[in-house]
Image (tube, rainbow, N blue to C red; front, side, top):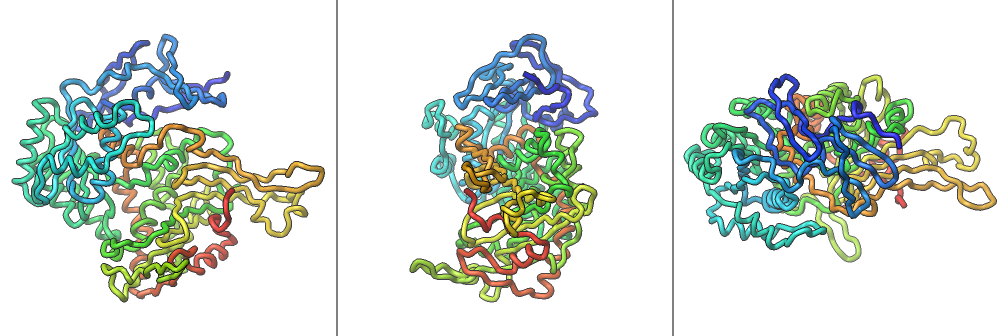
Length: 591
C-alpha cells in the first residue's frame, strides 16, 4: 500500500510562531518528539482531545486510503480499531493529563444569562468536558448583571446540557462533575470594581497555578468595549495568557467596524482577539480545504477552466420570531452574507496556502477578498417576506413582528452576484442567496461545472444541457453530505442516460455524532488556534466590499421585492441568475 510522504502532509495541531527558539519534548510510548514553544503570553493550553493522535499519526480508512502525519517515531506505531471501521493511532497515553499541575484555564462567559450562553456556549463547554478536551484544572464563571447564585446558574445550565449518543460514561455523573466547576458572579459590564471582585474569585480557584483566562463576550456590541476595558485592566491573567472571544456583528459598516477594532486594540493585542463566526466551525466548512487540497481529482478542476459558477445558498424556513428588533438594525446582508457566506467563499476560492498555520490560511483568504469586484445595486436583489396563508394556517409578514417598524424596508432576503478578478476565477460568477421564511432550511455550496465540449451524447441529453451538468454539492446543514452529480447509462439494451449522485452521507458513513461548531471554536480558542477566527484585515476587506452597496440601498430607500412566507423567494433572484446564464441549483429535488 502506498503511503503519502510525511513531508507533504502538515499537522492540524495549533500553529506555532516560526520565530520561537524554545523547544519542549513530548514523551510517548514509542519515542520523543521535540516541539517549538510559542511566546509565553500566548501559550496554548496543552490539553487537547484532538492532539492525542495528531503527532506521528497514521490513519487508515476502510476503503484503503492512507494518510500520514509528520515526524514519524522510531518504533512501530500501535493502532486501535474504532467501532465505525476507522483506524486511529494511539501514541500518547490517552487518559494522561497533559496540561500540567502548574496550569489552569478559567473561562468567563460574559452575558451568561442570555440565550446564546444557555443554548450554545455552556452546552459546548460541557461537550468538551465530556470528551475529555478540557484541562484538568479548569473553572467556568458566568458573569452578567442579573442577580443569581451559583446554584441558580447550575440549575439554569443543567436544563440545556445533553450527552453524546455514544455514552461512554454515566451522563448524570459527568453533568454533576461539570456543574461543580461552574460558578456565577453578578456585576455591571462597565464596572472595574466588579471585575476586580471576579478576579479575586478566579484566583481562589486557580490556587496559585499559572492562570490562563478566556473571556467570551456574549453581549450586545454596544457594550463590548466597556467589558473588554474592565476585563483587561482588572481581571486579566498575570502570568499566563488572556484571550477574548468577540461575537458578531463586528460593526455595521467599514467605519463602525474600524472604530470597534481600534477600541479593542487599545486594551488587547490582535493575537488576543478571537472574532468568532460559528459557520467556520461547522464540519463541512472545515472539510473544504481537506476536500480540495488532499484529493488530486479536485485541485486541477478548481478554476475558471472547468467551473462555470459557484453558488452559496443559505435559507431558513422561519421568520424573525420576535427577534425583529435586533434584525431590523442589520438585515440579511449584514447578518448572513457579509460574514458567514463571504467567509465560506474566501475559504473555497483561496490559493493553496504555504502551510496549515493560521496566518498562512488567513493571508490567502485576505487576498481573495481584496481581489473581489465592488458590488453595485445591479448585482443585487433584495426581498422581504409578506403574510401568506397555507393549509389553513396564516403566517405573519415581517412587519407584523411587534418589534419591527411597520414601514421597515430592511431586507429579509438577498441574492448577489460576486466576481473575483484574479487569474484563477476571472469571469466565474459566485452567486450568493440568503433569506428567512423560505420553503426550507439549508446551507450549502454548489459547484456547477462547464458543459462537456462536443459532447457525443448531446442528441440523447436534449437541448437543456444544464440537466447534464456535473455538479458538486457540499451540504453544510442539515443532514451533512458531499455528493457529485454525474451522468450514467441506465441499465438495459437501449441508450438512456440518468443523472446519479456519488454520495458521501455523513450520518451513514460516520457513526460518531458531529460536534457543534461552538465546541470546535471554543477548543481552538483555548488552544490558541486561530485558523477559524477572523483577523482584522479580513474584516476590513469584507466590509470594504459590502459597505458601498449597503449605503446606497439605505440612502435610496430601495424597496424590497415582497415574497410570500414559505416560498422560494423573490422572482428577481431568478432573473439575476439568468443574467449570467445560471440556474439556481436548489430549485431541483436532489435524490
